[in-house]
Image (cartoon, rainbow, N blue to C red; front, side, top):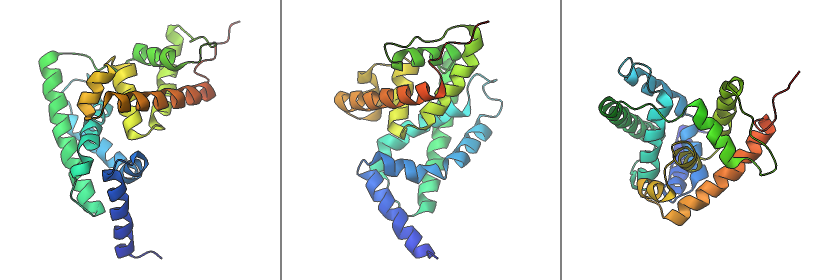
Length: 208
């Protein structure tokens, strides 16, 4: 049985790799706490925004800050990491609330946005299915596929392919070089295309 001190040492090593830019290590460190962060985001939103924004929007905002600032995180234990993450979600919820209250905008993750994502990553020889009946199905496929990307790949894909941001804007937001963001986007596109094809997102709906 692994003792608590050994677990702490293992987690500290994981955090060291995440601070050095290892995206897989960051994903591993985040995996167990993400459900808790999702609940926190839902609780913080409450009825503030009248259904115009979801917990996923807050978590996306929070993950941008995590990616940007993980290298400066000084904690070494799981507890310190979780506390740090909860503070980031607090700030992200407040920013999203203030922004949407001021701008009165709709969140970008709409079914039509997901259809655009499928169009953006589909292999050239395959046609993107169309029609209102497929909108909810496409949204489910894309949500599944996005969850399987690394944190950084998912952020870049959502910002560029769903929200329509430029790679230069995303590079500034994540404090990465444009070349690094383009590389992340390329890997995200490839993984999304493979996963969406397996899920059947490119299949034509059956006709009678």
